[in-house]
Structure formats: C-alpha cells, structure tokens
Length: 232
Image 1: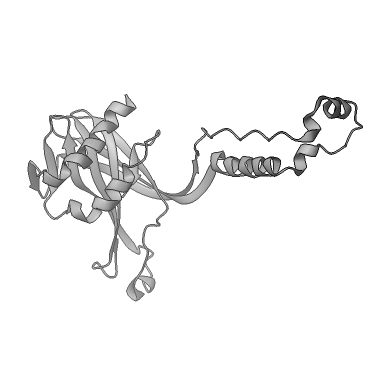
Image 2: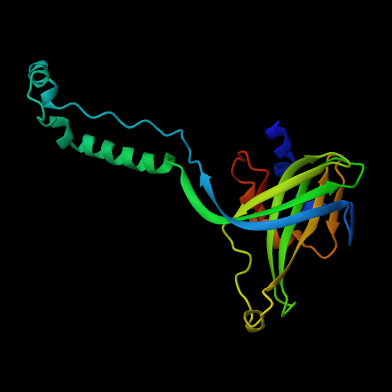
C-alpha cells in the first residue's frame, strides 16, 4: 500500500518537464486547520543488509597438526590468524559495516500541520511550506518546504509531519533582535501544489516548481520508509 501511494511521486518527476497545472489561483481547496513546529531528534535506521566479510586466507597453522595443538592450547594463547593481512582486513571491514548499520540520532526540527480536503477529489500529493515572517521586518521571510505522499479523501483531514535539520530561520534582522514583544516571527503554512488521484492539479500561481526541482529529485531518489513527508 505504501509503495502504491508513493508511486505518483516518482511518476511526477518523470512527467513534470512537459506538464502544466490544470488550474491555479490564490486559494486551494486544501484547508489548513492548524500548524506548529518544535525541536526534536530523529533516529535514522541505516541499511542492515551488508555484504559478507571475506574469509581469511589459508596459513600454515591451518594444518591438522597445528589446529589440533591449538585446541589443547592454554587459555589466552593468541590465534595465529590475527596477525595475517586477511584477518586485519576483515576486522577493519567489520568495523566499517557496523558504523553503517548502527542507527544514528540526528538533532533537528519537526514541522507539523493538519489539512482538510475541501474538494470532491482524492488528494495524493501535497507540496507545502512553513513560513516565518519577521514581525519587525515583513520583507524577511524564511521558508521550509516539504513534499508529502498522502491519501486524503473528500471532507477528510490529515496531519502532515516533516523532519528537517534546518531551524525555523537562518537569519534575523536587527529590527527582529530589538523586538521586545517576544513575537519575533509571524508563522503560517502555505499550500503550493496539490496532485489529485484523477490526474488533475492545482498550483499556487506565484509558486515555481523550477526553484525546487533539484531538491525534489533528491527527495525521491531514495526509497521511502514510514515517513509521509520529506523536506525540499
């Protein structure tokens, strides 16, 4: 089911160069119910399928006489294999593989919004962004854009949750630093593009897919796990 849901994301990348939105305007039929962000951390599972470690090569100590002698050797006697090039290479390879398969914890931010499908069509793909506009200087706007593979039926709601290593704002003006009210930013969520199951599209008229083309390609270049959204 997950594979079928995310298939349109891959098809969209292949078809997008010659594709034109079926409709555009200032308002979509996706209603933003609420939104928030928070600091968080995410555990990333690495690839657990690692290639086998090559077997150590044959050495003179592998002869029957030497092998039998080692069986009766005293505790703590060093295995002669440990000094071979193959053994040292295998130990290094095991160390590298372990570093690749161990889960890693990444510090970052969680951006969350709940949307409602106000149309009569099933939504499959949503491009949206979390905006931070400086209260003291509205011209300074930071955007965190996301792509989500969803299945939202008419009149139904869906919570979109995305993880990003990027904080809400990379810069802040002098006016923002001097703001004493504590409300440094005005926050909002904007829907940029909606893909429907029937093939129709809605896109915000002042949003340009070309600006996120490379990040979109990067977002869909690796298999999706349990996540619904990815950052752009």
